Length: 556
Image (cartoon, rainbow, N blue to C red; front, top):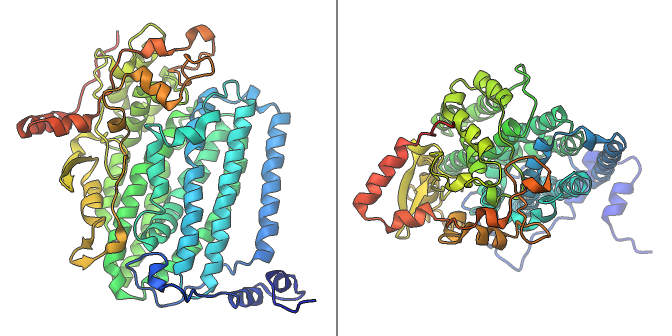
């Protein structure tokens, strides 16, 4: 029998401690001699201090723990079916899950890929094991999330949409935002993407809103499956946060990293705010039917978890190391969530674009109006009439809201950086990249694309940072295309070849279902393409009008 040292032999030894097992596993590590280390994955950071694994993660303890969690997840799904969950679950909530579960597995897969990338960069073997365990975590998360999606599809009254989420993800005007989020884990400098954007900001700051608030809201709407799955995911996040913090401490040992760290903390926080708040805020606020006035709004959650917990207890202490923290960005994000009602403009945008969705959006009701006004004073004056219009135009025979001039909505420009449209109209910024005009939702978004993601940053060459490129804007891809033809191209049509998968209501009567004929005759136009074709004077006037905003007409 071979006496070769193997992983199984290490982890099966009786009486060996977790620390000893971790040390022995570290001895199995190796560095490639056939390639220059700097060429493995590009980074402009210098990391010489070997990061430690704060959790002493080893396979012996990891796999039994995760197996037990998976058994609980699948057992809970069986119990939910036996309890006839779908008899009581709110369809409004499940419909929004079509979008949510189309998006979330992709960032999980991207996170797994990014952990493989950063593990290769990490000096020493100890934290490499931690990142390897995190990689396996992310694959597991994606698997149980996709299984949940399949479970919904098999049991929900209207499965259309769940069955095409993988295809829809790369096409939909809404999922491109989620795609940008996941691609941020892999874009540019490897440490920027995998450590700062993902573990230090996304997982440390925003996972509570994603993996705690979402399950809580699901339960309020009769969905007891999602809480089981996502609280199982959340239970891994403490290890991921620990991995990120350990890497951060190693970065801070090198003062020449500070310039990059300041840049990346600014970039990562703002992009996470722009994308995660847009998505999760909409799901929580508009996917629910529960309007208990004692229930926290998304703004209240944000202040507790992100402003108080993350900003005050995680970001501010970094200043003692000499790292500049961009306080104004945090306060501006808070202002966008509250005063500028960012989440609500996103929900309005999704509703306007309902024909090119792959899920149903129900109109908000008087009960919803009352709750929103209580939590966000001034909400009704800004959004009440729109949702009345949406309800009125949800019946077949009406001109689709997207193109209905009676409403008064002006379709927005899209941000080149975060891919969320420029919904806070007064903040739109324009600039050129490689001689082409682009629109940005905020000065921070312009800074990201034009300055941060450049070959040089503040006089320092940063070739590893990369550049946003490709066919990223949904509207430019369908410029000049008939709405019905675009829907066919997207494959957002049911099996009869004419009935739309998306519907502007939750009425399940076949007679109420919109078809291709009901939306044909409207030409999609790209605001960016039109802007580029304008004369300089017309462009300035257009932007001035855009910043002034629009007024929704009174719905009679």
